[in-house]
Image (cartoon, rainbow, N blue to C red):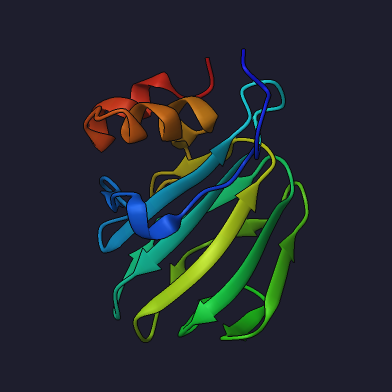
Length: 147
């Protein structure tokens, strides 16, 4: 591994938007970093107005900085210029975007997405994010999470 030069420089404008699959329609993301060593990943997320994200549980903490728009979630509304922290175990019945929203998020462990009956639908982790970044269909990538 060549570690010379400027490590970690990423230009989001040069990265493609990747559409998310079932339960997250209306969302797209750009992968800024994946740490296979720790399972942490950082993404830039774009959510269209009216997008409602599937119920989920954070198995580990997550940080989120709202660049544009707003997110309605269990604790209220987070608007542009605000930072959110989700502790491990945080549960969201749904997350809504009442306007076009752009945010930066660092996820420190798997997110467990739930079906309407509360059972596990799929697990999103660094492996699913990497697979989608590498061109795997989002709905197929779901089967890779939590391995």
